[in-house]
Image (tube, rainbow, N blue to C red; front, side, top):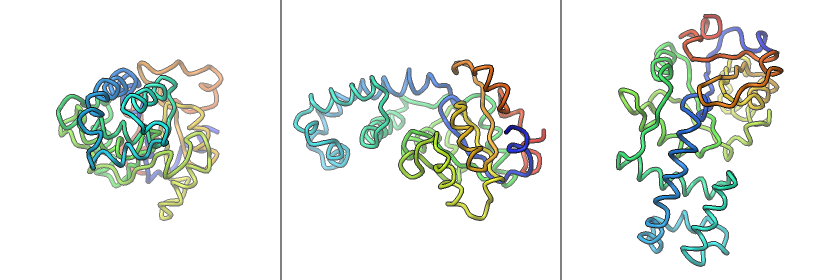
Length: 246
């Protein structure tokens, strides 16, 4: 289940974000606390604003009765790490203001910007698939610590759990591949720190490798035996015919 599914010509690189292109700590220790910190003042200033209405109105009715009810519900969801569409949309809105103000900047792993540029230059499509909402994904890649900071021109498409499905289900990867029918599933390479996601992609016919990064949970020994593991994108080549054979 390793070399046979990860070798050969690859025309699309499908990337996870958290723990793969940037540290897990950025999401858990920076983005989530930032959203909680600015939520009360945002609710106070924008509760009746037409621009904020679409985010507030997406919440269940029982949580739209007051600012305190909505804020308490958001805190509960984040404490339990519940990934639900209306909460992720609100987080994205709060982060958008933080990125725009310069309070937030995504710390990519050092090997990521150069490799994304090389893949793009050599004709590989780069596509993102994350549990974070597509708007939040775009914000992250638009405001990075790279030079230039905006890497969104390198990205061909974006997928989340709303437009693709859960990341541990093979059918989600088939949905993504079917959206680009010009590229057979076997010519996709999915990179993620989550072994269950890697195995789901392999079950869908894609090539896939697990990414081991500083700060990620330790990969169990049985996973090390059955999956291809990389510690850096520099382990991969720059072109379709060398990306998995460097």
